[in-house]
Length: 78
Image (cartoon, rainbow, N blue to C red):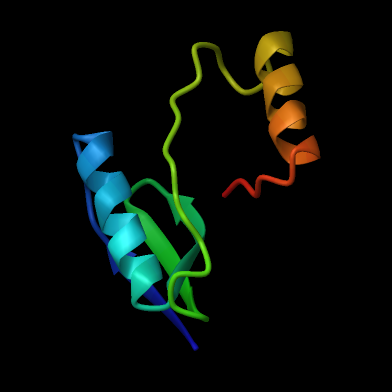
């Protein structure tokens, strides 16, 4: 089961709390595009969400290297 939620946050810490509340209820975020969250029903508490703002754009070599490091560490990014 999937559901979409339209929500705009200006405070990423509050957004992170909300995402983790959703995960605790078994709703796992699988996609995000400009205030549109897509959730899929799963096991409650299976995921913990952290929001991290990059210093550079996604195509910057430092960002590419850092994101590869996270992936190698087993961290899933949405």
